[in-house]
Image (cartoon, rainbow, N blue to C red):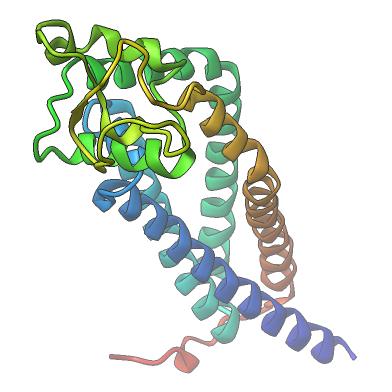
Length: 256
């Protein structure tokens, strides 16, 4: 009976480590997406924000560490190596503490992060030229897909250097509301308006971004809780298996 319980614990721990390895790959993939993506709002932020770049590299590091821990946990569980199980438990505990600390910091610094985001976006709008810049194309894509204009509203665009210093009445083409008559519709750059009233969306993109976050909040929270539960179960199972191993047999561990 005892051997059956140990075997069950061992294979459950192997399964949880496999899931942990997959979650680590997902986290690392998300970090790589933040670094490499050039078609979304993330691009606008990480070109100007060192905080987001550092956060992305931290995610890549955590994901890589999680994959390594999952691998070590699988080896420790299958071959019942106590030192690997103990190391796995310690790393899991430290990782869980780090995740909780990061979540608390983000929660209490959310107003500061929101202010930094507004500063970055306003800088992009002021210096927008419509040329081949990744951040400008990403912002145009955001305005077209979310049907919004500016950060808090179209008035943000009045501070744009090209629009302010041009004798013609210009407006951002990606803000164009198709239901309002005007000039030909273009996806990027600055267009000429027929009158001082721009034919654009009146809603700022901050509300669209916040709505997107709220709509996906359940998914984000579910993923975070799922990772935390897997980590806790992995810690419990690793300790149970570690206590049940009376004598380590290193001859079972494959040699390369």
